[in-house]
Length: 350
Image (cartoon, rainbow, N blue to C red; front, top):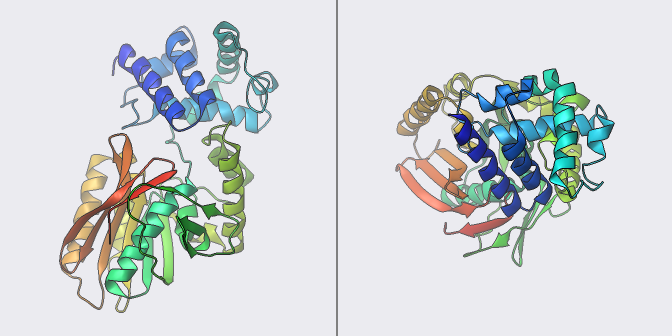
């Protein structure tokens, strides 16, 4: 991408942040888009980015925003913290940019390092779409579930049955949970079905350990600083994960290699569910192809006693598409849509 396209990607990311409720991060992206220059180490790295800087690719603006936020969270830059929530940023963009530019110069090594990693919010509210999909799978097959999540980050969405869901007037999940997910319903209400998860595991190239302060600071850095409720929800989910020894369930591995291991044996008496949410775009094309071939091969070998389901919640335009493929029968069904942070759910499944 040339420099103009990269600046445009930052502007578009800022627009998306505003639409998703973060005025601070929107302004941050817009100011960087207009002020960043190649005169600095960070500016040179960003404006000559060799990949796809857009939201559909490397999400470069969120990588940079996360790197800056990490300096605030860890207390590494007090001057930067003064212009971050809960404090107020200067209303003048020149003053705001002066602080940002200084931080990028002083902490260029940290920022350049962080730019190499894809953002990992492990957004818990996406579990509303995932859990609705799992209830649909449970309703169809009436068998316990085995979960395999690729691109799992810290694995918090593997714990989706441990959260409370409020789908309109209908409730499901763990009704006593401190993590309460109440997506705005646009369309039908998912059919409430009791599900049983018999086994769960996940993989990620760079899994985050919920018992590691450094890893949790990294995760928090990608959650926008003016969205306090998201931070509180993350803290509650981490406490649940720690009580369930979650870090032992997520392994560091390439998605296709791990799936090959997970799918080598048919699981009699269970539905094996492979799922992912806002992760597919970060996989290289050859990894996507290998994963698809592995899942479809397992699907062809599936029968009524050992079904295979592939549940995805992935970007499609300005929202995320919830899609289910299942075998036997080679079902391919669009279940609905949700926004990237799971704030609303348009359900058409059942």
